Image (cartoon, rainbow, N blue to C red; front, side, top):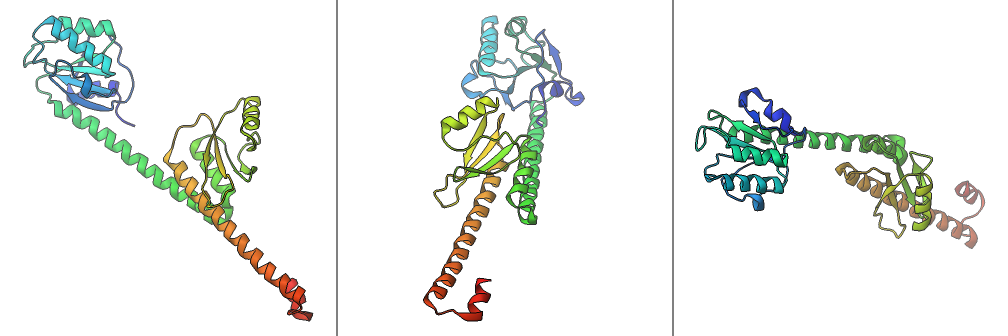
Amino acid sequence: MAITLSALLATPALKLQQVGTSAVADVPVQWVAVTELEDPKPFLSGGEVVLTTGLRQKSATSQRNFVRHVQASGALAIGFATGLSHEKVPAAFLDQADELGLPVFRVPYETPFIAIGKIVADSLSAEHYARLENLLTGHQVLAAALLGGGGLPQLLRELAAMLRTDVALSQYGTVLFATSGSAPGFGAVEQAAEQAAEQNRAWHRMPVATGLKDRCTLAIGEPYQRDAITDYAQSLISVELSNQARRRASERAVVGQLLQDVVRGSLTGSDAAARLG
């Protein structure tokens, strides 16, 4: 997980010191933005720690305006470097931050901004790598479940365990498999909505493409948050159902040809009995 604001401030090597009375939220830091603009709001997207030396903040008005703009952008906190243009965090700056509930911390002269940015970037990189590693492991688990003899039921059980919720698969309006007995029917939308309401359970539905007009649907019990593993599960289910459809078509063609040969009399006697058997 990305480093939180509280963990960042508690990093000994950075020697950061919180000032003011605003509470520090224990939420992940999305990025570090360094700015000396009077209004950095257009260049922020929220969730950042904003670092500044206060170079352009010569008056109390400019200091208050800067804090207001940063708070309006959705930033998590402001880091104010001392020992450059200001020896301490200006009183007007700090008063405005306290009034808005925006945490402020002092960055000592010996701590470069890049050191703060590197810690945040490294934590984000580690989080991204962990997600990719988990996704790869999930791919292997689902593929092994499908190909190891358990088929679609085992794949869906594993998917439900990964998502920590119930899943259900339907085709032609019929539930093929569900990890919960309370899975909704997949007929009319109104009927499904009524069932979901009765069971106090909502379902997130995703279509599964099989190349046929079969309205195949994968349902995941709410609360549902989009996870890349579901995309892979959809692909595996799609391939498996398509293969099953092709096998059924092939078997029907073979049986049809056999019956045709028997009816026409081109296959008789013991050969016909053996083939029919």
